[in-house]
Length: 427
Length: 116
Image (cartoon, rainbow over all chains, first blue to last red; front, side, top):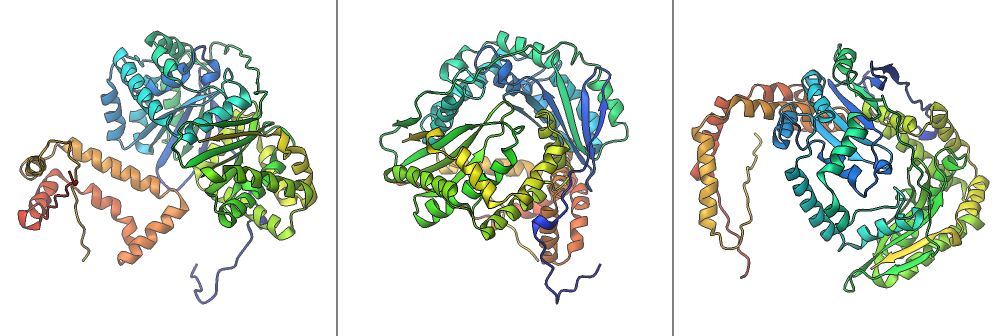
C-alpha cells in the first residue's frame, strides 16, 4: 500500500481499538507437565519458560530457594559452570533463571534452529546440577559483598523494610537476605531443595515464538521423561503479620543528602473486583509521567526527580505502594503533598479530560505491551499462574473504558485513607 | 564512505606503568594479526550476532528503527543483507582485515594520568 505522505496519518485513540488477547495452545507431556504455547512472530526465534513451584515460600531456611535457583547454571555432574555458559553462548542463546515467591524459573531464549541442541543441556540443569562447594563459596562471597554495598543505599533499605512492615519478616513477601543467611547456606540445603523442588518438583511450561516441527516430541523426550509432577507439593501456611506501628524514620547514613520515602497499604490480589478500577485510580495518582504526584511533587515543587505509585503483583495479597527519593530537607513536605493528593482524589471528582488521557495511556500501554509472541505468552503466564483467565483480561479493558469519575472517587474513599498507609523514610 | 573508530581502553591498577600496559595490548593485537582465529570462536561470534539481529527484529519498534537506520545509510534494503554479511566472515578475512587496519600509523594513544 503506497502511503500518501501529503496527508497526515489518521489519529485513532487507544480506547477505540478492539483489543484482544490471542488464545494459547496447550498440550501435556508424558509425565503430566502442562505446556502452554503461543506460536507466531516473523522471526525464527523462540523462548521457553520452565516454571517450577520452587519459590521462597517453600524454603525452610532463609535464601535457600534463591541460592538454589541461582546456582542451577553453575555446574552439573558433566559440565563446569564455564562449559555450560560457553555452550549456551556458542549458539547465541540466553539462559536465565529467576526466583520469585511462589515460583522459580529457568528461561531459554534461542534461535529456533538451535532448540534441539540446547534442550538436552537445559534438561541437564534440572537433573544433574551439582552445587559444588566451590561455586557455593563464590556465590556467598559475591552476595555478601553486594549486600554490604547495598546496605549503604537508602533505597535498598527502604524497599526491604516496607515489605517487612506490610507482610512480616517471616512471610515470603516480607523476608530479605542477611549476612547470616548467606553465611549459613550449606551445600546440603541446596541439594535437598533441588531434589525436592526441581528434580522431583512440580513444573509448568510456557513457550512462544516459532517452534521447530518436532518441538512436541523433543519436549517429551527431554522434559516429559523426567520425574516431575509425581509428588504433591508440600502445603504451607504463611500468615501475613503486618507491623503495628505505621510510621518510621530511619537514619542509615547521617551524611546522606537524600531520603528514600515509601508509603504503602495492604491491598487485595487480582481476584478482588476492585483491582482493575483501582489500577485506573493508581494511574491517576502516580502510575505514569503525567500523574498527579509527578506533576505536583516533581514538576511543581521540585522535591524529587520522580515519584511513582503502583500495585504490587503478588499472588496471595498485594500492596499499594508510593515510592520516591527526595531531598533530605523536603521529605516531610513530600509526604504531606502525597496525603494532599489522596485527599483531593477522595473529595473531588476527576475531570473528564484527565480521565480520558489516563484511559488512553493505559490502553495504549497495553497495546504496546502485547507486541509479539513473547509478550502475549508472558501475559498468559501471569494469568495462568494467578488462576485467572481471558475474562480477567476483558474485564480489565472494559473497566478502563467504562469507569466514571464517581467510581474513582468511591475507590479513593475506600482505599486512599491516610491512616491505612505505612510511612517510611530512610536517610 | 563511513568511518568508524576502534577504541581500546583500560584503567590501570596503581603501580603499573602506562608503557607496560600499552605493550600488553599491542601484543594481543599482534596475535590477531599473526595467528588465525579458531573457526569455532568465529562461528560463536557469528551465531551471537545472528541471534541479536533476530531478537532485535521481533518488535515493531526495533524493525522501524533498523529500517530508518539503513535508509539513512543509503538503502533500507540493506536491513535484509546484514545477516549474510556477518555469516560470510571467515578467520582468514578477520586476519587480513586486522593486518590492514591495525597499523602503527593508524594508531593514536592517549595517556591520561590522575593528579597524584
